[in-house]
Figure (cartoon, rainbow, N blue to C red):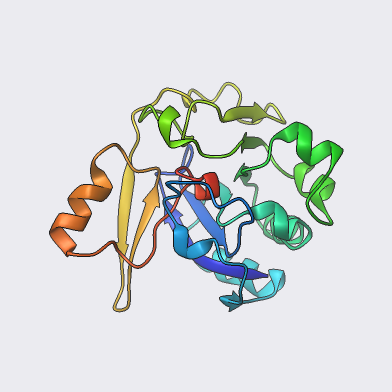
Amino acid sequence: MNIAAASTATESLGPGFRAVIWVQGCPLNCRGCVAPEWIPIQPQRLVSPADLATELLAGPAVDGLTLSGGEPMLQARALAELVRRVRLETAVTVICFTGFTLARLRSAPPGPGVDELLSEIDVLVDGPYVAARDDGRGLRGSTNQVVHHLTDELRDCGYDFEHRVRSAELHVDERSVTLVGIPPHGLLATLDSVLGDRPESFDDRDPEQLDR
C-alpha cells in the first residue's frame, strides 16, 4: 500500500471513534482539493496491509475505519485486505470516500479489487469535489456527492451524514500538522493566517475530498 497518512483515533470522520487511512495518489485533480499534496501518484509511505493493520490495532480501540485520500479505489485490493485483517480482531464499520461515482465503479472500475473493497464498505461517499457546491455541511465535500449505505450497519445510527455541522481536528507531531475532518467554511483561511502557510498535511475529501 502507498499511504499519505494515518490516524489511529478521530471523532471527525464518521460516527464513533475511528481510525483513518489516507492513501497517496488521485487521478481526478479536483479544483479546490483540500489535500493537493496527496494527488501525485508517487511513492509516499509503502506498507503492507498486515503491518498497517497491526499499527492500527495497537492504537486505542476504535468503532470504525475511514478510508480517504488521495483516491482509495486506486488501491482497492490492498484496502480490502486491510479491512479484513482488522475485522479479524475487532468489529468495525467502514466509511470510504471516492471521487468516482458508484455507477462508474461498478461499470468501469479504475483498478483491480474494486468490487472486493465495495463488499467491505458500509458507507460510500461518492463523486468529485465541486467547490461551487460546497455548502459547508455534512460528511461530504459538496452537495453533488452522494452518501450510499451499502449495508444497514450505519443507516439508523443517528449520525447525519449529509447535514451535520462539520468538525475537524488538528493532529500535531514534531514534523507536521494534519487536519483531520472536512473543514468548516473559513477554517483553512484561519489556519493560513495563524500558521503563515497551510499545514503540511490535510484531509478529507480527498480528491474530491473535502471530506474525508
